[in-house]
Length: 175
Image (cartoon, rainbow, N blue to C red; front, side, top):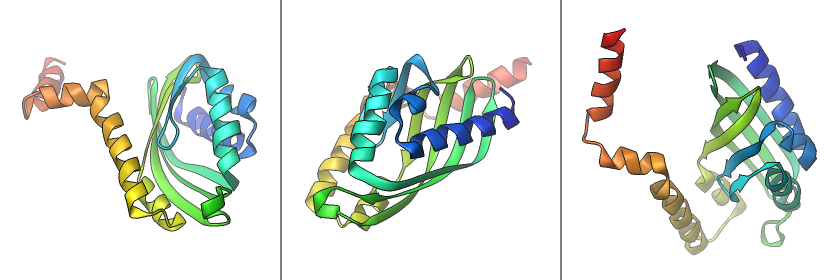
């Protein structure tokens, strides 16, 4: 996929997400894909991804918008910055508008998403909703657990400082 195709794909992806049509959204993913959502956690497979979008996110939000900018791609790895907004339908936050920005990472296979991860400052969203501090702490603790349990984080923590940079430099020097 070239940069132009990737940015077209991002537009199709976000329009599908905004529509609330879970099957349309899930069609952007490989059958075995994993979507790591910063609120609802990981969802694997098209059926689970469709369910997350349709029956979790669009249950809890209305007037959903999502736009991706500055999409870049290198082989099977793509990134984009985004802005998204919604109006909460959760009873205690009913009618409150939230706007957040984030970074998305796409691992692609055969022109579809095999793995999606996002990095979002969810604390901004919770502050806009008026989430109580004690509830925010529980959520932050869950997010911390997800981060610390990731294979990539475990490998990072196991490496000596500077080891990764030395490995990259050695690879570059060999070329």
